[in-house]
Structures are given as C-alpha cells and as structure tokens.
Image (cartoon, rainbow, N blue to C red):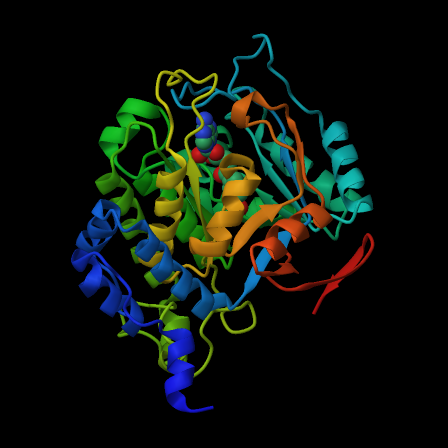
Length: 427
Ligand code: V47
C-alpha cells in the first residue's frame, strides 16, 4: 500500500472548520502534548464535530476499533457515611430511612453469585462508615476472595483508604500509614483501586461541594503510593456541578502529571517521551516498542482508565442544578481523551452517561470502554431508575457493534478474556 494511503487512513485531512483549533489539530496529528490553553480552546469552540474527530483519531491510534467491556458486579456495601457532600444522594446517617449495611455473610453471598454467573470483577465501594472497625474491611475482602478466588477485587476509593488509615490509627503516619493499609488490604485480596472520590481537584470546589472529604492532593497521594506498590488504579472527574471548565482542565493536568511520574521508568525503557512527559496517543511511528504499558512490560502501577462522571442532581442537595447536558458530556469526554494523552483508557460509564449516550461517546467521542454488566448500582439513579441497573453481554455487544466497533471482553487489567459461558480465562 502506498505510504500516502496509510497516512490518509490514520491522519484525516484537516477538516477543522474553526481556525482557533488549527494549532491544536496540528499538535494532535503530531502526537504533541496539549496545554491547558489548548483545552480551553477545545471547550470554547462551537466546532464540536472537530473536537470529537480529534478524540476519535487518538482513540483509534490507541485501540483501533476495539471497544472494551467487562462482566462485573458493583457492590456498594453500605451507604452509611460520616460525610455530607452536597452532590451525593447516596449517603445516609445510621438509622435514617434508607440507610443500609451489608454483613460479611451477605457480601460473601454476593461474591458467590457473581462468580457463578461468570463475573471477572467485583467493584466494591461504600460510604465512610463511622462505626465499622478496620477488620471489617479486611474480613470483607477475605470473604470475597475465599468465596470467589477468580474475582478481581477493585475496592475502596482513596477517600475510604484515608478513612481506614484513620480508624486503624495509622492516619498520623501520613504516607507510611497509607502504605501499610494498602499492604494489609492487598494481603486480604485487594486487586486494584477504583477511581472514585476524586471529584474535581480544586480547593474552591472542594469547599463548596464536598467539604470534609480529603482534598485533591491527599487523593493523589493515595494513588501515588498504590502505584509505587504496583497496584493499578483508575481516576474519575465528577463534573457539571459547581466547578467551571477551567477547573476541570486543571484536574486533568494534575492527573496527567502524576501519570507521567508513574510511567517514567517504563517510558524510558521504551524510548518514549522526553524524560518528563509521556505521550501515548501519537501516530504509530512515535512508538518504536510498545505503545501502552502492560503488566508484562511494567511492574509499577499506573492509572489504567479515566472515567469522567457527569453530575446526576436527582435527590442530592444540589438538585436545583441541571447537571451537564448531552453535548457537554460528549465534549468533556472527548477533551479528556485529548488532554489525558498518557492514560490508556477512557471510560464512558453507561450507568451515569446512559447506554445511548455512551454508544455515541465510543463511536465518536474518544471513549474505548463502557464499564460492564454492573447489575446493582446505588450511588446514582439517572431519571429515578431503580438500583437494579443491569445490562447483559448481548446488549453490550449490540450497542458496541452498532457503533461500528468490535466488542472485546477484558478483565480488570485490560487483558482479553476468553469465555465459554460462565467459564473464562485470560492469557
Ligand atoms: O466516588 C457521587 C461519584 C463515584 C454522584 O474506577 C456522583 O472503574 C455523579 O467512582 N452524580 C462512584 N457522580 C463511581 C465511580 C466509578 C464508577 C465506574 C467505574 C469506576 C472505575 C469508578 O460517583 C463517587 C463520586 O465521585 N458520585 N454522587 C452524583 N450525584
């Protein structure tokens, strides 16, 4: 095939109609890192089509036409929480109507049911329970692990980890306390950390919407320590409430900087980056060895996926707000794909984005992952739907294929899953 044809397939002719995006386009094509100002231009432009076109170009370079999903279960073990974040409709005080707590035996049953139905992952998070001792959490992990050793346990947001350091009296030891909590949890069965609780890394936003929760620097410390221990993590950004677009871009910038540090050694070994920046989203020619880190090629932990979470106002103390529009959601995930050039995966979490909008985000907005079958989800309920929010593998396949993509089941570490009914394996 003539080389001009190859480059036409991977680098579309510049069809960006907004002149303020021309410089951004040229950087994206070359695989150069975008600045916060570039991100602002992407937010300000009325040419959403081009913003998505660039995100899609990057997504196809990184993942071709693959769209990832997993067979998972979310388990929100308790909604009893010491905090009162204004965006949260999930938390209750103990004894309040709607408050609930799973016992260890109930968690064990959930794990057994998940495994018997072929799930590969259990995503376990809850409120900051004011009375459970530290042992409750290690017992819970052990129960899941004993009952279903094949399940990868992705559990506890950074906020919960800091809470566990406090209740186990290790809080005053700073990083050492966090490290020893993570080691204990790993010994009990923890596989990785989910991306929740990040919200928006900005003190003004923090004080207005989630005062009392840890600030962005503490959240990032937990993830840095997890990465040092070889534990993979994800990162969310909860947007569309009291923050502004500039604060979102700052959040992305901070995450990207931390991922540079996590990938530094691996990138040097691959000849990627200039020693400080690691860009994984450029044209193929920029990657003499592996484009993306895998557990085989890198023994550190890193951010595997970013999950932009659109604020769902229903039943929260910020119910007066509208929450982000469909266009803002599409634009934000596309910009996250472009700005977070060193985070391998961009997830359109269908529970919060809805299945139809997630499909568009995968088809044209830079997303390559849709999360999984979920089954029960308590934290948000879009349009007041119930906690039973299940989709099946067939439905996910239909949604992804209709978007022109090839569905690939993955495990939590993004290894392709080979499946025969409820039996599965990874290489
Ligand atoms: O931590 C709470 C957010 C998070 C609301 O790591 C809200 O793979 C929108 O983190 N509107 C939990 N968001 C969900 C989460 C997650 C989901 C899917 C995959 C992964 C992953 C992580 O939801 C909370 C908080 O940041 N949240 N209330 C709300 N009203």
